[in-house]
Length: 388
Ligand SMILES: *Cc1c(COP(=O)(O)O)cnc(C)c1O
Image (cartoon, rainbow, N blue to C red):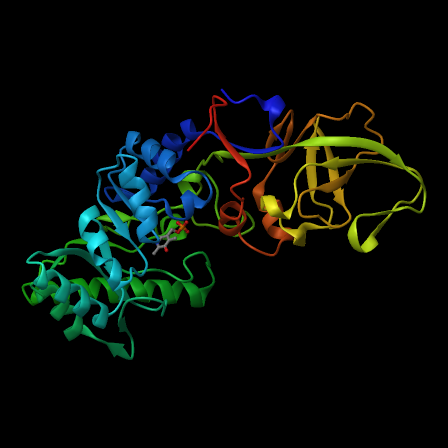
């Protein structure tokens, strides 16, 4: 048990809510299964613990960004298939094989290297082919104007590879504008066409997956084998002002809290924090909080009226956010004292502070805000136990 009294800044993650969020995803996608995206320490929520909770909710396939993240899951005893979405350097192919990881084929040349390794070691390396239908990040091109179909077929035929699936990725599935919808629908068409052409060549394409969180929310059941939600099982979207085509009932699993380190009355005309960007008009009651940008609270949120909740009162951050501290104006709330808990994200009495508010002021999306919460912030679970 973690003693809250002893903490400075912490994230409480309600892992017991993941199963509910998984059910909400499942309602949208029919018979498609879920591949749990747990990269970047599950966007700051704790990769191992999220994976364990996702498993309890029936998820049987996981994906991470890189080898070290995959190894962390294996070391924690996760035996399910793990897809590495990004690049793994050829110098690490031994480790890929040892962990029985499934590697993304990020390019045709990369497939040749992985194949050569498999042949040299008399084994088949497990892979999913990444087909690039319009993101133009990783993958073998299969888009209007350039369809490297022969290359994709060749990858399937490589004797040092065991191609277990094929996937693609959406750059604008979050946007319901006409152009973006047409673009995404064309990607779906290209992907299905590719799969059909492979089958016509006598190739078994394996597991097909294309939907990220917004692909699920806006395109629902596409008849794929898997979908790849990250954010959704964490109970949030990228930005709560973006319209979506469905009406799911997600419950955010993360709360982010800190402590009031002192409260003092500051005289008329005084300025707060670095740069002196906030001036007190009249005597103001100012509380210092034990959180700053080195905890992951973006400095972009300085002096923009970001509210935190203390004893159920919404109070704004004033002045520049410092590395380890920031200040809030608590004038009129005499019940606020040193040691009080301040909620940046989550529930405090009747108040609900959404991570979306931080992201909006930081001019980013929740994906970044959540994954930017630093390791100094203690992670605890719903029972106040230290979370891994
Ligand atoms: C990160 C990632 C996802 C998950 O994205 P969300 O928007 O969090 O659902 C899915 N697929 C790929 C290839 C990714 O890189």
